[in-house]
Image (tube, rainbow, N blue to C red):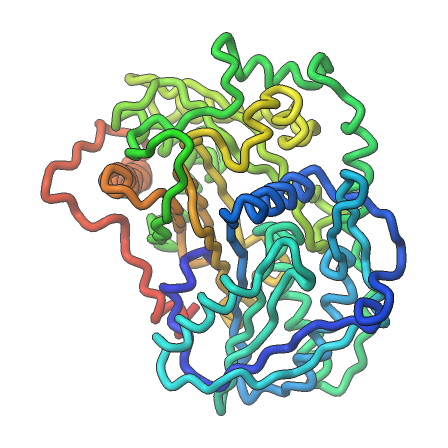
Length: 492
């Protein structure tokens, strides 16, 4: 399971059916159930940005989607029941968000009052037309300020189907996508076998949010739990670590984005890379981060890496199978100075990561609000920010069936003012997805960076370490290893 642009996905054409969620409570008096729940810090900030953008007639837009395959002729009623059971199981998916006296209320509908209405949308004769429809459908339908906050559908063919779900970030994160696939497919297959399903409610993200707010809403900027953040900000008092290379952006301006994906290592190379990392006391994500730091340094960045890193707050048990935004974003710093070998840089990553994890409790949004209130009031991060994310999809629930279901994650955002890169490890290798501003400088910078990173991780795989700075001379080689999306759709 990997992440790449929906525009790169080879979805075979067919008949599109969607299931629209509705509630009799919404049609009558509004949400029922446990009223007065509070949104999380992440959700509140996300919703506020959407409100302010709408008021300024400058709407922001983004979505997270997942697609997966069903072999054989699709049983439409069974899939509809599986999708409804999935929504009923996760409280956050049943929530309507509304601003009440300044507070963002998160009010769930009663699961027994929810229903799905099937609708034949259209039949598409080519992959290109279908792909264009899906991109536009997700973009037009996902609205942070309107319920429901997701779209569910399938592309039906005689002998197979592609199922899709697209969500607003306010109800999920990247690690929720494997949960979606596993739960929907498990329920669907059980129903096709003639079994009844009665899934118990999943541990609710609303409970997680409530506990988080209880612990951190009352703290102030002097709280000692913010010492790690204050130390990271240093005398410059910059809350956000800057992306160290030129992207050609102007202050206070947002740009259309480039959304690219490539494979850095194939499955065999990724196995060797992992063993190389373990041999020096690190983990694969540390090796990738060390390689990123060295490539940024060799391209003109500083010898000390400073960046933001999203970290899952799910834990090993309680929230592992829940849908929600269980992500904290933390700063990490380590030495990647010239002359340090792979083992030394990895030791720095390991120490920096250990220090970061020791202060993981304070929510990013709360620290941002307290330590950088002027920047918190803005609708975006103030400048290009250094950001690194890594997920090992092989560890997700249902990963043993991924070669059969062929799930993929797709993210999209209308505009940005910097660059973000996500790395995924799956059974087929190590992959990279980057979203960055569409400027001439950014295309050059990110093209060089991605190629240098690919060569660097391959050098670590071949030789066990860094050898020399990667110097790219015109004409550059193509950016990364192009993702064969059609082959992925066929073979996973």
